[in-house]
Amino acid sequence: MDSLAIAIGTSHGASSVSQEYVKEIRQYGENLADAIGIPEDMLREAAKSAVCKINIDSDLRLAFTAGVRKVLVSDPAAFDPRAYLKEGRANIKALVRHKITDVLGSDNKA
Image (cartoon, rainbow, N blue to C red; front, top):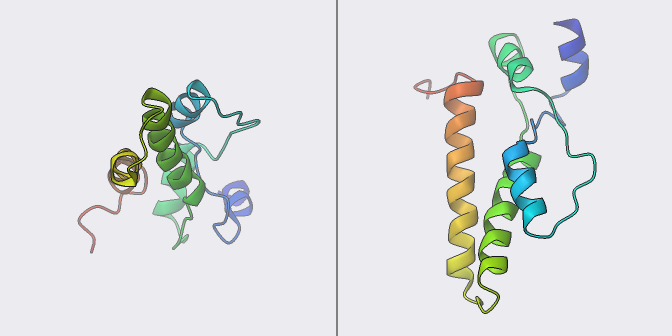
C-alpha cells in the first residue's frame, strides 16, 4: 500500500485512463501519446484504505472527448451542440457509474 499512497499522493493523477476511450478517440483522429493511468485494482485498494478523495478528471475528459469526436467525425455536418454533447455526457454517465460501483465501491453510501 505504501507505493500506492505515494503514487496517488494527494490523489491527483489517479485516473485509470480507460483504454476503451483512448482507442475511440484515436479512431476518430486524435493522437494521444502515452495515454496510461493508474490500474483500477490499485484505485479500488486505495478507496478501501484511508484515501478519502481520488481525482479522475482525465478519465472524465477522455470519455467526453470520445463521444464528441465520434459524433463530429461520423457526421461532419453536425453543428448542433445538443447532438454531440449528448454523446459526451452519456459516456461520462457510464464512466461515473462504473467508477462508483465497480472501482471505488461508493455506491449506496450517500
